[in-house]
Structure formats: structure tokens, C-alpha cells
Picture (cartoon, rainbow, N blue to C red):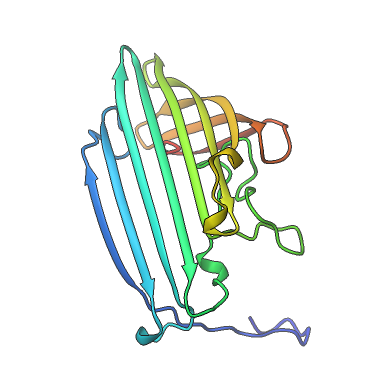
Length: 210
């Protein structure tokens, strides 16, 4: 980005060419606000040198969501797994590393606050990610709903470092307001094990967390 006059400005252009294969099975009754059904999806990416990619890697992302009624309660479950490895002895390109923590993964943690940190203390991402969520959703009055949840997840520097007992976990509650325009979300989560600070956090957003 030129123009600041610091003498340290530079533009970086990289070419990443990849083949992508995806598969999905979706039986949800409503993709934006499901109350029943499942979603299973997998994506595999391959960026080899022969395609002209400067950064070479193979990357997998899998997701599994399930929604079911138990009486008046909707149980919503989610699991997300990500794995990526650099090829040809390269260092993994930072833009392909996984990050987690925050409103749509592990509530009660800062956005992208899980996993390795770089020299400056900022999130560095990792080669592996695992996130597991469980929500119980119940109607309170007309378009107002209540939610309680348990989240667990982490980002790992290497695929070989992925361990279930190294997941950070949070619990919390939230509300959902259905309007003619969108579903509005507010959640309060508190980290209970792993991760960092135990201070609770509010997060707001549009649509369900997953």
C-alpha cells in the first residue's frame, strides 16, 4: 500500500491456484433458522505447483450440524474440523491458517483469540481447528427466544497437535429476536476451562451462531 511516505511501504502480490472439491447433504427445514434436519459438508482444496500456485498446500474443512425437537426445545448441535498442510517443504501461507474464538465458534473468547500467537502477541492461526457447539433453543414469547449453550474448541499449530483434552470451553445464555428483516442475536459467554481470561463477554450478531 504506497503513499504513507515511511519508506517501508510495499505491495505484495501472490498467486494461489487451487482445485476445490465439495460435497454436501442438507435436510434442514430452514437454512437460516433450522429446527430439524442435518447438514453434512466437506471441502478439499489442493494447491500444487503445477497449477502455478506460489503457495502449495492441501486443506480440508468438514462440518456436521444437527437440529431436533425434544418437546418444546430445539437441540442444535455442530462440529467443525479443519486441517491444512503445506507442501514441498514450504511454510504455510498465513492466509490459509485456521482461526477460532468469538461469536460463531467459542463464545466467551475474543474474536480469533484461540490458538498460537505470533511475536507481537497477535493470533497466528494454526494448521488444525476443532470446534464443537451445543445449544438448547426455546420460545419465550412470540418472536422472542432464549438459548443456553456450551461451546468447545481450539486452534492447533500443527495437525499432529490436535487433542480433545486441549479444547477450551465456555458456557452461556442468549436471546434471539425474530424481526421481519432478520433474526437478531445476543449471547453472553464465559470461558470455563482452557483458553485465557475467565471474564464473561457479550456478543451480538445477525442470524444464528451456526
